Amino acid sequence: SPFFMSFKEYEKIKNLPPSKISEFFGLPAEQGVRGSQFGFDVYQITPNTNDLNHINVYKSLVAEIIQGEYKKTGGGEQILVPNRKQWSNPIKIEEIKGERFNK
Image (tube, rainbow, N blue to C red; front, side):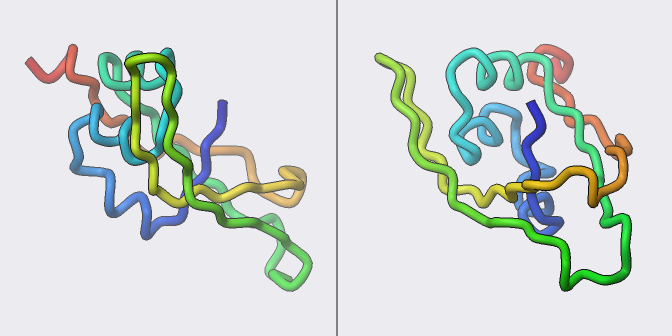
């Protein structure tokens, strides 16, 4: 599922190992393990208008996740985009390779 972040947050994670990205964004077990193994695709969206006064986004810190023995601390900042119609279609800008492909 889409997970949005600011460019500032992207700069923090782009050179991290995939398992640390999973940790930073508190991904649930299935997504965290899959992301750590196979990596993450990074997309960019931009507003469809120059009038930014009418575009709402919400920022929140990602909470810690605990699923049995699986624990991730979270702490990253996510951006919630309530009205995707106000934004461009996502454009893939990078692929962060998973640990399975970095050997």
